[in-house]
Amino acid sequence: KSLTADEEPYSSSTASSGTVTAKPASGPSSSSKEIHLLEELFEENSDSMLIELKKVPDQQLGMGIGKRNRGILVTSLQPGSIAAEKLKVADRLMAVNGLPVTDQLSAVTLVKASGERLCLQIARPRNVPTA
Image 1 (cartoon, helix red, strand yellow):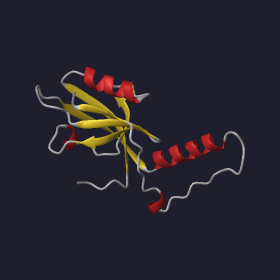
Image 2 (cartoon, rainbow, N blue to C red):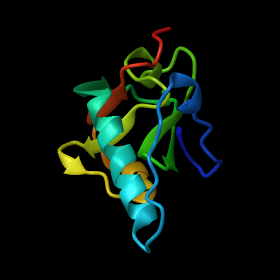
Image 3 (cartoon, rainbow, N blue to C red):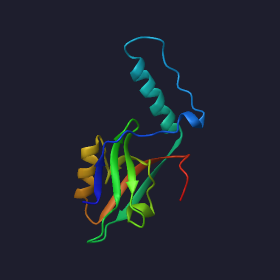
Image 4 (cartoon, rainbow, N blue to C red):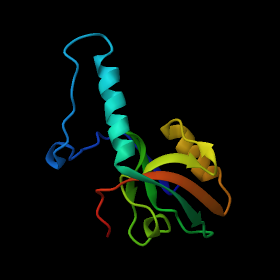
């Protein structure tokens, strides 16, 4: 019950960071090329890390997971929660307990099904300020 599935649009500050995306002039694959360029840019500007969370009985993890244009992201954190100690909003979930995250439903299901130890492989954007 501590996880929320959230479908709101993701607001990005990409334009203010000075990033420019080149769009091909025409062609049916122009949007897929743009998406590929954005994914490469995200990977170049992210740090991959393994985060271990220990669940406590009767205490919520306190994180929201949502699908965005960059993948499955941490969309919210409850202040003082287990998740807030090590995760940041905008962390991209790559794997849960060694299993790749392919969509929002699988991410939520894998997190809920994990035992007392939760191991998350994430990609964290380098420009996210620390609290």
